[in-house]
Amino acid sequence: MILVRHGESEFNAAFNRTRIDPGIVDPRLTGEGRAQASAVAIALHELGIRRLIASPYTRALETASLIAEVLGTPIGVEPLVRERSAFICDIGTPVAELARRWPALRFDHLADPWWTAIEESEDALANRGRNFCAAAGRAADHNHVAVVTHWAFIRALTGLSLANGTWVAFDPEASAAPGPVAGLAQAI
Image (cartoon, rainbow, N blue to C red):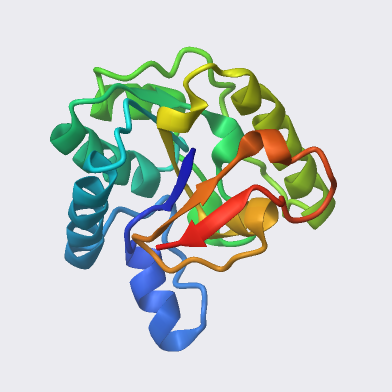
């Protein structure tokens, strides 16, 4: 399995300059973020990725959509891989609006709202990561799946702090122990 951090978002661009939450709800990708997603798509093409899983946040869906255009792969939307709720950007978009923006994707399995309204604890994030790994490890094709997700979710699973538009190989079956998961190959 490959964990992909979404491309640079409007939030990331502003926050990286000022270290202050710019107050952007569910931000879109920047031009740089779209370029990063295209570069990831080229790299994933070489790895034989056959399926994408994406967080329901706009920045992850845009990244996954750009990757899917290159790979010709389907996208499944999975709220377990969403960002840890800590900033204004972690307020999501309602299901009806997501379905309007991405009519080819399924959102009918999502609660509305699907994001956490209060700041999520590190323990809750770690538990969500374990739940995802348990389900992903049972999938027969998990070696051919890329998950478009977020900084905190990747950090919870791997202990790594990935930059936007980068990825890491990951083994969800090696994730039974609490804390960062041992199934890590390398960050790219």
